[in-house]
Length: 103
Image (cartoon, rainbow, N blue to C red):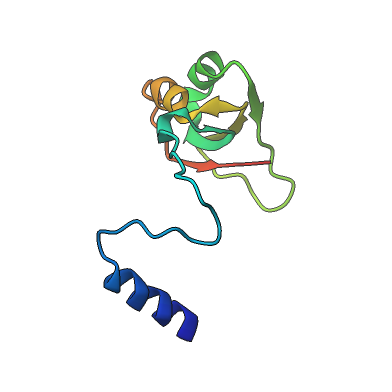
């Protein structure tokens, strides 16, 4: 905890300054989140199952092996796609939830 407090104090002392750390001596560029590639675990209403299959060509249905499936829902894993591609395709669905599934 004391190391965290020390880092916060150091950040406040050097507010607005770029301090080189021991981790890297060069500036790192952030990737636009829409270009990041992931697999996604997605839940949609059961009635949109066929639409999901058409929108996501590399789709793996998820079958629960323990417990009970949620009635009225369809779950699947996408192939690796960018966040931007997912957003475009998912716009045609009523997504209940989605989780990035990096494996």
